[in-house]
Image (cartoon, rainbow, N blue to C red; front, side):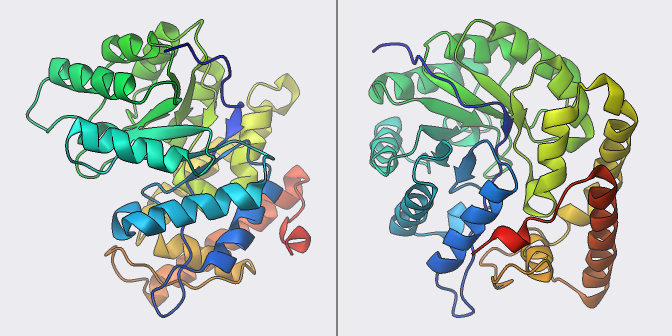
Length: 318
């Protein structure tokens, strides 16, 4: 194996939704439009076939087809990553890693909770992860502390050993712990590696600590603001604006997580994106009350974006 010599770009890498038709089938045309939406918002890369994509509700072939559709629509404009581990033996997971990498993605994402069981030690996790890295040759990998099937955090001491292989280029961090984020960034210094924080409460502080960017569900509702803070978090003359946007992230945390991803599809539909709110995953009911709350939030978003000088991207979507 040879070390990876390129890394993913800094900025916002959204965890993509999967649009469905009302029949329940994947809406591939809607997916192409959605891909353009993320790109027009300023995304630095795309994370297809993830939990927000309802990856566990997709068939194996749909996972491949969804990922390939995104890759083909992007056409090299930004890097694309996608999940490639869905349980079974390490050898079985390695085979699907190779298969999904064949769609043309730039890195394959490994779900930490599928590399070892919940009652197994960090040492077992590390042993299995290194076995997977060895079995997948020169394929660039990333890790995601996904809450399903269970949330397995990767301590900085373990992450350090994974990064030292030279194969790990991405980490979607869900530790919710700024000090641990700092430790993880520190142990990966000097490697082609980027930590992308999912926890928007720490968005600005994680970026200041050296995070490569953000990979958060909020980007499926207000991606322009996520892109904006990635670009302006350290601007000395914009700190009042940064503080205001950061406070908005915190204040809107509850609503964006309620009945997700249905509520995200609803918000994009309200903003003019031609997709259905159909969701395969059991996530709770999008009530009239929730719709009203989201309508009010969308109004606030438009106001903040206007005051920051951010132009709506929908006029550019074809």
